[in-house]
Length: 379
Ligand code: ADP
Ligand code: RBF
Ligand code: MG
Image 1 (tube, protein in one colour):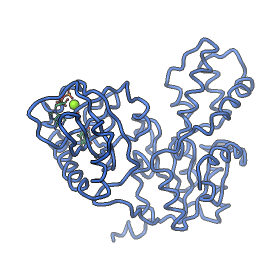
Image 2: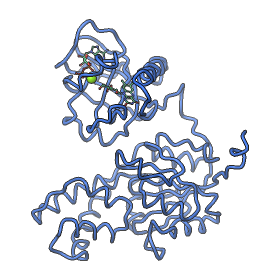
Image 3: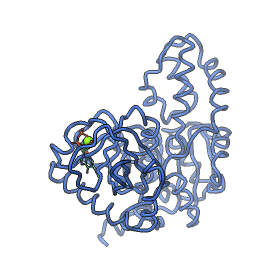
Image 4: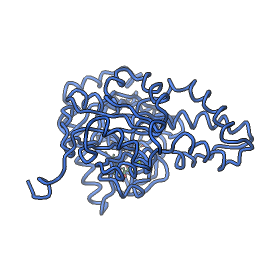
């Protein structure tokens, strides 16, 4: 072990944020605001998420009222918004990898605090819809329990105090810049998991920025490693997606020598937001041709910096012809790595071929192979 590694301070407990980190609160908030703003003849423009992520409820409300020039005060806004929001709290979904992470840490006896800018009462309600979550946290703390919310360090300092830990022994996991600043000001280690895309450059003060909770490596911070990776792949809850093959960016075969059969992004917009970008694999079915191994990327293809999130499935089979317009069914069973940028086209292509090898080998393992028989693929 190198000197710097052996001196590196390791964490013995975890302080974790809720909204945007463990659950997709923004999804429900945006749904409500979209409808609510219509009432005032305003249209949600999609950019406000950037401004409200990580804020306290009061700050977020103030931002909306000011940005949209609503003819009501912040109090009136809150008195209308909160009942709508409360009625939808049971619809807030956990983020991919969230349950896996907290159950893993709990299983290894790692003390955890849930430390959120939201109110204590709302935190309790939100997590009540997620089975077994409350029991994972020995401390739960909201911004109404300290004098200042994040980016002030108060919430994390108080969380550490209640866990009986030195902040320097704590690892903070946060999706917002505000939360990252709070963690650093408190003197903790901070792993950032940005909840909004293409924001990595704003997180310079974090100790590490990862793409999703699927990428967290607890052992980097002195915490017990995950043991669920098999042969460089992470099993996930299988999900299915399908539709007619459409024209893509026109560069898969031409530029990379790797054809990817694209699906219409409009038809599966909801699934696209739900799944973190990254490289995945599974099985692909074409009704008249059969079922084939498949490796794919989801995301913005950092090397090409696309403005749209797409799915790029490469069927691991040599076809003698194109199959545009044919119904393609995919079942995605495992995760390989986050999308990355590369210094050259050759290195991108080499990495994709490596992904292919990983997927081909993994799909022979019984736990992944069994999905080849899934009726969805040949329906
Ligand atoms: P586009 O940009 O239109 O997606 P690509 O160069 O990525 O074009 O080629 C994808 C097309 O190539 C698919 O729509 C399909 O018709 C055909 N194709 C041939 N072999 C394969 C394969 N092994 N995997 C995916 N698509 C393939
Ligand atoms: N593009 C990237 O910019 N970064 C990646 O890490 C990346 N990984 C990929 C992995 C696989 C298995 C496949 C099939 C594609 C990947 N691509 C990646 C996407 C590639 O850029 C895309 O298919 C082409 O741009 C065609 O539109
Ligand atoms: Mg393509």
